[in-house]
Length: 200
Image (cartoon, rainbow, N blue to C red):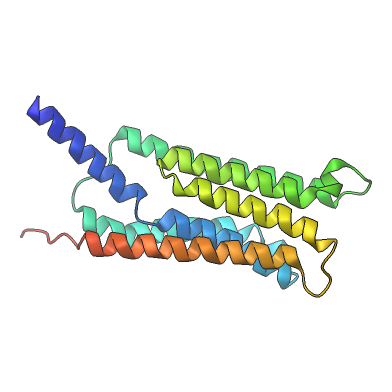
């Protein structure tokens, strides 16, 4: 019985190693920040590369920062399935966002063209919420609400504010907030878990 409890505790610790390092936060923050920045620079054609950037940050961070602190322990099937679900979810959301982006650019007046940015924000927020569910990380629900408010609020304010683009400012600002939060989580993780020294 005691051995079973220890195994559960070990599994929980491994899961925390793989979900509480802030790398997913940083990846999401980079995507949101990059999206706003590319629109600001009038380079929407490069938006598709943001997903690749996020994956590179995530995989690179895992290999260089997390694995040296985990040592020889590897996650079990359940954790692997969660992260495969995360990757599949990321791809599906990316495709959905791209389709909505195309619909919003098509001619004619429709709910997609009238509230395209708010709908876009809702889809992105939904995806971030699913990530929070998959990773068992409640802070992602805050990120989701922040992104939706930034995009929906930015779209509404764009009709009234002409001095600057409220949508881009709100999106870039929300990306920065998520990046700062993710960096803080990563720093806390690095301080809490030192590099495992392998015995020779």
